[in-house]
Image 1: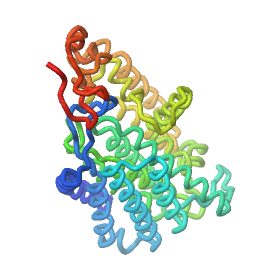
Image 2 (image 1 turned 30 degrees about the vertical axis):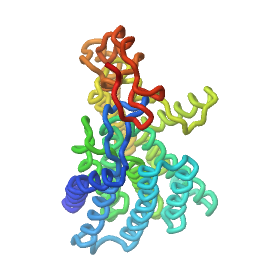
Image 3 (image 1 turned 180 degrees about the vertical axis):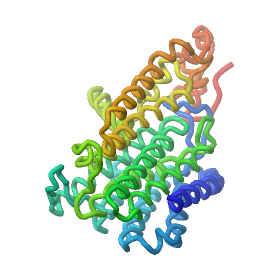
Image 4 (image 1 turned 45 degrees about the vertical axis):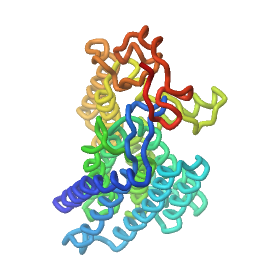
Length: 413
């Protein structure tokens, strides 16, 4: 455990320090998020936070190789698989950097995601089998394994990308998921007297550290966005860490938890850890398709936008989304490890608290201004604490939006 803690701290410290450099690179290359009508920030913010997170993950990996326990007592494939995941992560991060600077079209970006996920499959980081509660293993052929791996990895990357709409939201959700998965890997190995040096535990500890190191720069008010380079990177690493479970052990280890959860968790883990962004993704696709628009088109109807609309501040909306992520992710992991009544009572209480915070708190305490900030949009006047009559006297700088075509500009007097 001490060595995993060191891996976490190294990833945290390196990511925190490299964020300053990543911000400078973003400013010099023009990788800056201009203000658009659907955004909630009121001034341009640099991208490329993914570069700092990639540096933190790489530093944690190099340090782990030199540690007494992880470096000498682990099986050879632990660092081999982890290295493959980092290589695929670097590839998709590079695609994200290009997108953050030049704004790639959706199809080109999807091609980069497929290439990165295909690299995982080609190098052996993929699903191998499905275990059943009675010990039977259902082996997957190469085509089934490749298809399922591609769907899970690409789906997770896009789910994280979709949820990256508020300061600190994506980093917090993935950090919570990575921490929960580390607990699952470590506890399951310890209970079955197996080696504690596993690829999943190593990657999740490093990923949790990278997210924690990035948050001080990304929490509201953010000084840097992770951009597509960061959202796709951490989505790939999180999903790939779950893939390594079926290649780490011969047969699925047992636990004292619910046998069904133990059986399906290697497949459903990325889904449970990212249930909030995945629900957001599905709703967005359905909403846009029904409106006759492309599923990849942007709008301002994501879950976090709706939290702002009902009266939450941006910080409070992020904290509530974290609570939902913790309830779902920790619930799936804890139930798979323990099946006691107190577990279900605790999860029920946490769910009730989260629901109350989501829907009741805005009625009891409404902040002076919501996280939508002072966007100047007439439809947001009431929830931003402005007099709607004042908007009638404002003249936009350009017909394309209140900040002009480039996202910059001023409103009329």
